[in-house]
Length: 333
Length: 239
Image 1: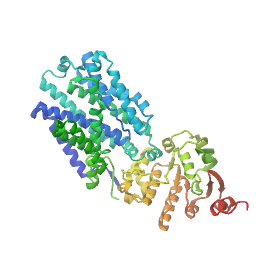
Image 2: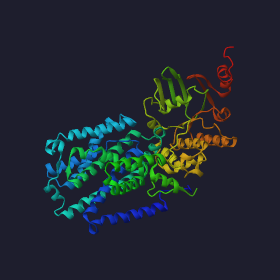
Image 3: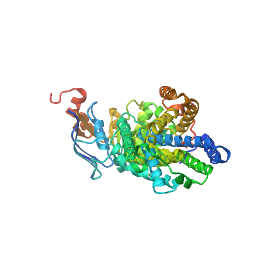
Image 4: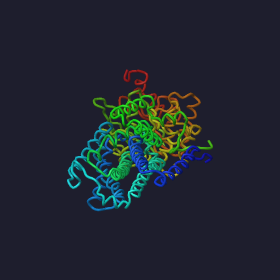
């Protein structure tokens, strides 16, 4: 066969090298920056991870969940239980939070997957509320008012404050960049081909042999697991926790949807761009209070009306640019 | 033994009976043409065979197995591929990627890239391999439907009105493609309004009207039958 199939472009090679270079610079941040900057980057990584994961669900698998806060809160509760009640090193509790969230996502999926479209969205939200109400009953963890990680537990992370901050920062970096890497590798795999096909047409996917339900379940469980780890990270960053904050639909889903929608749904680059825009807006506008939220909402509406594929979708169409190509190119036609 | 066997297959949407006790055998290696006026239930019949719809009554047997309850994806993996009458491309993917989906998840997943390229070659879509499917003109979308179905390496290929709107030379190349596919041993059932195209490859015809099979047999026999003439030409069947 004279035609060859290739998967990289020049832009993607440059982007790949730049991404590795940027990752190296970010890893070294604790040696050249202060704790406030570390925390800001750490928080950015939380949103980068959540947006990338939500995009896998909504942008590819067609699962528009409004209930991902269920797994953020669940992960936070697993971490605080293992650390404060069982005396674990909180860092070891992070993978456990991921496994636990993936495990509980399986029966949850059996329930919510019976619903379609808008009903699925509402169903996931209701499920997250159930999680919140159950967790608010755990009196050992402060019931409805919540509790904090004990100083002893925090000391297990690292003995000194700078070392602790650095450890939490690196964890955030691992999860944020890791989520993007997982999404990229997943979308380049066989499952990714199936997911991209499902994104474009479920009827055609079904007719061509894709077991849609299995693919969706696999993605839902994977995303829930990683979201649970992000929840554990959030708990380490915030130390203090209450059910209302841990299961906040605003913090862990609404802002995340905003990021994906303005950045560009159904692309890997979109959530990255969206997260950057969200953080810039927040840094400059957050002191405006509720006016800030109105500006976010107006911006989201504006982008949806003028560039429904988000800002990255606009760039992609206009300049044919793809930094993380997941597709295939046939050469030598 | 018949490759595909339909046994009193019936389907109604509300009071509208779209498939009315259709029984039909398709032999391995055959090209069967399906005719019928608009609304006769031809596409519904394909949906029932390919698994996009479930019958209210009756059975679908494929290669001796009862597949009546199998989902469409499993039927594709067994070797039933179909094209859609209204093209349904993966718009955000390239032509090659569209074919690759069929090749990867269809009956034979090995050598998927080579199989996808070959399907594009047969259907004449290879020069457009890197074009996004969402921007293709209608004719190319129809060819892509066939390429994607072929890439899945079917034993039974269901083609739903792929010749409509083609110029004469395009129609000739389509017929060549269909003969090539058939020569490889693929059984074909083809719904088509372009009768001369259908007649140049089909050895047997069936005619549907109001969900019922009203005629089947050799093309000359079927096209001459009174029932068929009454449906197509408005002649009274018993007049």
